[in-house]
Image 1 (tube, rainbow, N blue to C red):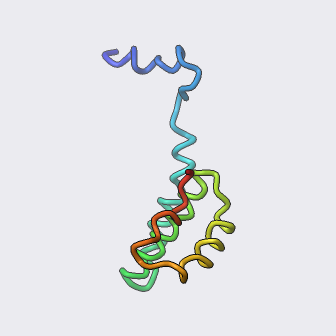
Image 2: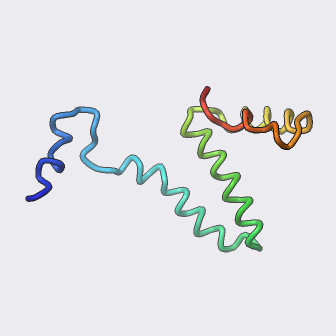
Amino acid sequence: MKRWKELTLYISDGRLEIDNNKIENEIRPIALGRKNYLFAGSHESAQRIAMIYSLLATCKANGIDPHTWLTKVLEEIPKRTVNNLEDLLPLKS
């Protein structure tokens, strides 16, 4: 009862959801991936898998086609120095 006002806030604002199912469904693959990283072969391999997975999830979150983004990045990386890669990240500009 102490949190009734916060609990019913979604009624007064149509942008708010009654539950967090949408975000739960969005992060489910991350949780499953985390479980699969245990069988990546080594700690370093698991870190690499997690990094790639995070980049692809960032593409999805920003409405960027992962295949197109990855193709562009793989074509562009050889032309760059290691300290000149930040603008290749899958973020909306």
